[in-house]
Amino acid sequence: MISWYSRVSSLYTPLTRVNVDYILKLKCFGAWHGVTDADTLRSVASAFNRSFCCGINVSAVTCNPRDLRRGEREQYDVFELGDFKLGGGATLRGAKLAYKTWGTLNEDSSNAILYPTWYSGKHWDNDWLIGPGMGLDPRKYFIIVPNMLGNGLSSSPSNFPPPYNQARFPKVTVEDNVRAQHKLVTENFEISKLKLVIGWSMGAGQTFQWAVSYPDMVERILPFCGSARTSPHNIVFLEGVKAALTADSSFEEGWYKELPMKGLRAAARVYAGWGFSQAFYWHEVWRELGYTSLEDFLVGYWESFFLDQRDPNNLLLMLWSWQNNNIGLTCGFGGNVEKALASIKAKAIVMSAERDLYFPSEDEKYEVGFIPSAELRIIPGVWGHFAGSGLNPTDTEFIDHAVKDLLAT
Image (cartoon, rainbow, N blue to C red; front, side, top):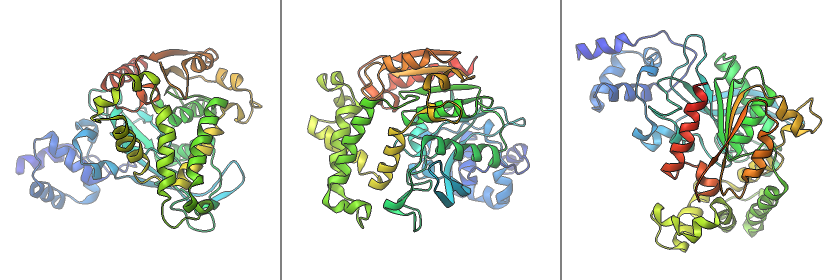
């Protein structure tokens, strides 16, 4: 144990502003040194106080989300936004932003990456693109994963106190989300530059917004399977999801006491026709995910997806944010998306899935044409929009390769 304590001591750094759960750090440190015994880890924890453990430099530790239990991956910190005024005029008093971090912020704060969540997603749903040896490597970068307002962890209809609880929760824009994240990054971590902002789907929309709202702060962007403005066709698809959620008689205009299960299951069926491509279903690619029939896939994957701690009011709030996403509405651009895209200073790789029904490649080709330093890459294959979800290893490798290429510039 003496030699092990010495190795812990060699990693000691003073307590920094970076607040990462100390138990997770100990576990990662133990894994690095081949020590996984719980009693040994407890001995180390008692030998060094909590502040010391928080100061362990995890940038030197191989900390892979895939090696952690789900409960450990789901742990998060909370940033107090205070009284946060939304673009629509309402103020969320005592607003909170939930977030997860991987890695350690370096001395000059130059290794920070922001990776926002997506529609209904939580921070752990982004883990698939983070890990040692990947582009988003916690040994090199400090990766911040903020949860969207409305996702059930950050301030949301499901967890906010009256009077702005449930159906009374005010509308939140993508720009509101980005302003909240900016407060987290600049006030909590005192970061003035972001090496990269990256995101899938609604996370891509937030990525575009970051580059427009804070052009001198964002060095690189990699939005994938998303857009700078939501198209009319996409809005129509989301109307179907909205109708399914609200048609359940137990929805009660958003004042339900128990989750409206029929509405959630119906929304899952609507989503099922859009998340993957026609070819995905023609070729029964769902079998690669372990499902034995089409109905098994619709119930086992899609219904399960929507029944996994997803709240209808939360979903409707984020759906509104998605439908109203438009970087042209940023102050100074007068609704002109092309002008807003042209203002982006960040180096960009914009990625679209070959058969994405939400965000077709031709839409992204159009947007990329206005960004001064941007490249479009098409993710090949039949997985459609969910090529960006981490389900298919081939797509994951393709996206990760782009991350590495962009960070190398």
